[in-house]
Structures are given as structure tokens and as C-alpha cells.
Image (cartoon, rainbow, N blue to C red; front, side):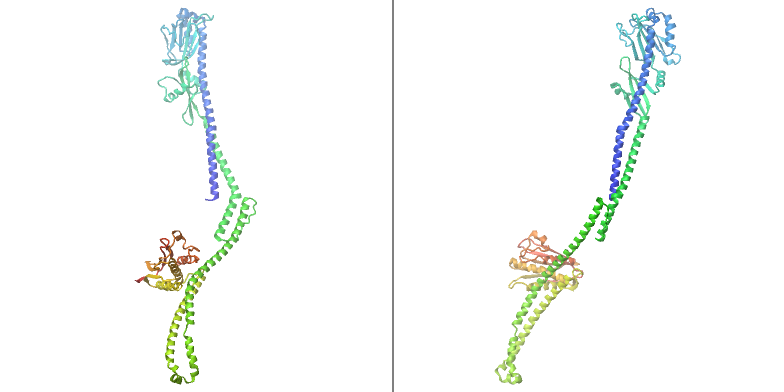
Length: 634
């Protein structure tokens, strides 16, 4: 992922997180303020209804107090003049259709006169006369005789809630109370409509304990009983209902007022919160766009150029390319430092190549010297034998014969006939010729061995010279013969008297195309190490096993096993490491060079040992496409 994409993702995440956080804060703080404001408005609307209801009670209370203070009502309470009631009380009370109940009680609570309008008859209510009954002294509409006082409020009846006012009848002079005047008005649908129009609040009203109370209102009764505060219910996003309890004359909840309100305030709050969210997102996107533009010009584009420059150098390895930035900020410093690093890298690379070349040449020279040294041991033995044969040659005897014959050169026949030495000349010359022929054959054999060693040295040098430029030359050779040749080369360098038993398990394979000199290099190193190992261990008997076998259709394995000093387990993984050796006179080059040669030929060289004193086994596997088994011998 590019740096620009990462910055875009990070900035987008920051903008979205901030917008989300801001929206949560708007919903939590701002929107809640709108909700509180809306509920405060709903509470005020319900309070207007409550105040209107209280105003009706106060109006009823004033009318009742005026009638109770009149002398006519005062006298009527004393003598019960029915004519006065018919001509005065009924018209004053019921003609305005705002009074539905009138009781005149004496001082003992006995209803001396009473009428109630049947509101169910509508516009022409029928007035029903109440029989003369006595109200209980504890009736809530009657005050104590010793302390007569007005009583007003809501009173629940069998026909529904009623607004009532109870005033002591004292007359115009404020004399002793002769009874109680009770006036009431039913809180019916007509009055509810009047109050709704007056307060401009749409509300409904139910008895607190009505059996037909809606379930929605019933669920709010518990909260209304516990608190005088309104209870709110959200119907949906556009409607809100509020409930408030209104007490009766006993100060217990009597009425449930339900006001339905439009949620215009919270609708505006929602709009404000949505606008704030869109505004925040838009501002964040604008800020992100401006910031990305600035970052693109000041940071991303220069970094992209620097990255492209670095990638170009990495692909082309052209260390002469430069950015040459003239900026004076951190990116400019980075670009100039990068150019300086490239210069140093180019110099370091040149030095490293030079050092690597020197090290490679040193390793090649070491390998050549090691392999040549192995062959030179054989060449040195052959040269020594030739020199010894030459010094002990019979040519001196032949020279003595010639010195004896030289004075008789003119008459050799007479010399042979009469000189006693002449009789022995032929047997002597015959013996000398046989001895010289034998010496010649021995010297020629050693010379051939010497020439083979010198040729192998030459091939080793040529192979190392051509190692970096070309692969080895493949020749059709017999691997069995190569093993025997390696045995001969290493055997000539053995100390005098060293007797090593060689056991062969050579499978006869058809000649195959291999790099003969590299195969010989590996075999000489392995057999030489085996010989030295058994001599150092002083094993009795000293024995080396050589095995050649085909392991698949295209691979052969050459195994060199000995009963010599063996290899420690911790050294098995290091035997092919350059410079590693456990020999006092070793250099650690032979096995390393052999492993490299085996790998270069597509094969591999492995080692195994059961531990010190238990010998070692080296396995040389070689791919041979042309190798086929034709028999076996032991």
C-alpha cells in the first residue's frame, strides 16, 4: 500500500471518528437540550390547562361564596321557603347552564333543599330534586361546625368528576353559620372543550381510577402517583404525549390529564444535529483535501521521487545517478544524504569486489596448490626412482668394455680369438643388454607415471584458470579406471612400510561423459584422506573400502570408507568448511574444494562417522546420464 493511500485512510478515519464523536456529543448535549426545551413547553401547556381548571374552580367558588353570603339564602336555610328557591335559587343557579348541582344543608348536615341537572339530556337538562337526607359529619364537603371554612376542588361522583365549592351560609351580616351551601359543575366534555379552546392545548381527561382508562395512560399511573411532575411518552418522531395528575379535595390524585403535542422543537433539534453532522463531515473532507494537496506537494511527491530514484538504482545498479535536490527542508537533507550514501556504496562495492576477487583468487590458488601438492607427491616419488635408476645404471660397465676394446678396434676378430678376455666379451655384452633393457623399461614406466602426474597438474591448473569463464570439459571415461588411477597416485605418496588393505566393490559401468579431472580431484582427496586416517589411527588391519554402484538410472555413487580415526559428531557439519581441519599438518582445503567440485558437477558429497576411532565414510554422488550396468566384480 502506498504512503498516499495510508495517509488517505488515516485522515478519513480521523474525520469519520471526529464526525461520529461530534454527532454523539450533539445528540447527547444539543439534542437533549431541545428535548428538555420541548418537555418544558409541554409542561407549560399542561400547567395552562391546570391553571384554567383551577380558574373554573375559583369562579365556581366565588359564585358559591356570593350566594352563601346573601340574606335570602341565609333565611332559606332557616325556614326552607320553597317559593324563594323556585323563584331565586333555580334561575340564578341553573339558567346559565354552568351549574349542575346545588345543595342547601342545615347546620347538622341535613339537605334541606337540593337540585342536580342531568347533563346527559344535553341542552335542556332535567332538574332532579334530592330527598331530604343527612350528610355525614365527616363528609369532605362539610366543614366542622366549630370551624366553618370554604372547601373547593374536584370531587369524584358516580357520574364522573365534578368541580365543587362548599361555603358556610353566614348571610350578609356575617352572622353565625346556619348551614352549608354546596355548588357543583360536572367536568364534562363541554367544559373540556372550552378549556382546550381557551388554553389552545389539545388534552384529554380521565378519572384516576376509571376502569376504562387507556393502557397507555394506565402505564403512567405509578410515576404520576410518586411524583407531581409530568410524565412524558414519545409516540413517534412527530408526536409527544404528557400526563399530569390533578388532586381532589382530599389532595389525592383524582384526574389524569393527557396532552398531545407536536414535536416541532425536537424536529428542529434533529435538523440542527443533522446539519451539524453534515457540516462537520464537509469541513473534515475539505480539510482533508487541503491537507492532502499540501502533503502531495511538500511531502508525498518528493518522497515518491526519492523512492523512484532508489528503485531505479536498485534495478539498474547505476550508481552514477543523482537526485541533486536543492530543498532546504528535511526531505532535501534526506535526498542529499541519499546521494552521499550512493557514492559511498559505489566505493564500498568497488572495494568489496576487489577484496572478493582477491579472496577468490586466493582460494583458487589454495585449491590448486592443495591438489597439485597431492599429485606432486607421486611425481616426486617417480622422479626420485628415475634418478636412482639413472645413477645405478649399467652404463659404467659398458664403458669399461669399450675402454678394453678401443685399442683392439682395428682387429677385433683376432682379439676375440686369442685374448682370454675376448672369450667372455659376448656373455658380458649379452648380460649388459638385458640389464640395460630392464633398466630402460623401469625408467620408462616411471617416466610415464611422471608424465601422467605432470599432465594432471597441467589439467588442474587449466581447470582452475577456466573455472570462472566456462564449465569443465566432459569426456567419456570409465569410473572404475578413474578410481584405480586415484589409488595409484595416492599410493605412491605413502610412507615406506605402510601396508593398507584395499577392498573393492566396483560395479562395471559403461563409459560416461564426466569432467574427468574434477572427478579425479575429488577421488584423490577422498582416498588420500582415508589413507592418512588409517595410518594415523594405526589400525590393524589398516583397511579402505571402495565401492562404485548405480543408485538410479541417472546417478551413481562412489563410497570411500575406512577404519581410521573417525570424526567427532560436532565436526561432521564442519568437515567441508573452508579452512577446517583436525590434522596437525592439514590446511582444510581438500574436502572444501571437493565439495565445491561435486556441487558444480550437479552431484553432492556427504560424510558420516560413528565417532572417534570408528572410521568414516564419504559418499560422492554423481549424475551420469550415460551410465549403465554391464556386470560386477569384487
